[in-house]
Length: 201
Length: 201
Image (cartoon, rainbow over all chains, first blue to last red; front, side, top):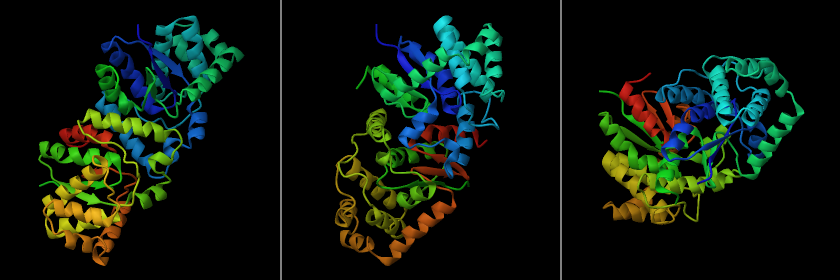
């Protein structure tokens, strides 16, 4: 049984959303599972000397166009929210809480719901109350989610996931590791698909 | 008759090579022509705050893998040369000279030959003598090419092309403008294809 793919994402990363919508289907075609890993991209960007997309001269305007075209290409409805980027620690902690206590599928469904709430519906997922609302809408315990969003246990878990990502060499999001091979960006999913088909190098 | 696509490239840009191998075929499927525009990427990178790929922590190692996989995906043989990146003013001036005096097709054939000499055969295209040799191998006048590679007329032309690119918003390479719509990176050719199929937004 091969290792699951590791899928690192940040809820405030637009291309992470695109990857989130596609990764499980892609992996399933190769009989692979996916471990979803919510991280905070900000600290990793600082470390690698990268900067948030919209802070870069010229690249910001380009990114708005590119994201809109990318969504159209994959049949997704949405865009860059007016409040962008946002801090997503609360949602990420709820994700880790759900993943641990309710299981992989519940965690992944919650993650997709958060992405869609932000990029499709423009809801402010940086608000812990909103992040908890989304858990409630997914059939989970909204009050327990709100507690988890500020609980030292899940705070520590999120920090640990970020440290593990750094040690694994992650410097952007989405970032996928397949048997140690790195793929950065939703635009590399086709290459990941090709790579899995070939069975490596 | 629609405007030709503008294809901005730098001979030292690995992903420009991939785009160069694919752009004319793609455009032809949409009955579009392509205007190839050799530019110097360095000054534009400075302006946009971008940095050369391999100067970025972590991203450099990643780029080597990604480029190798990209070449494999498109059936191209090559890799990052040991001397990378290099200054390519000589080859770019010869390109503009050929394009103007011998025509579009000769210019494009020379450009492809320069890319292949560098990324497939590891030849030092920063050496004006080598850039002129390649023109000779393409059936052009090698000595005239060597003169053009240092001629004030073609120096000025290359600077003018760089200024025009900056004014058009170009901040990286490869960069393609299709009816004013920007596409950055060889990984956006499929999106350009989709965009041309739809006839715009």
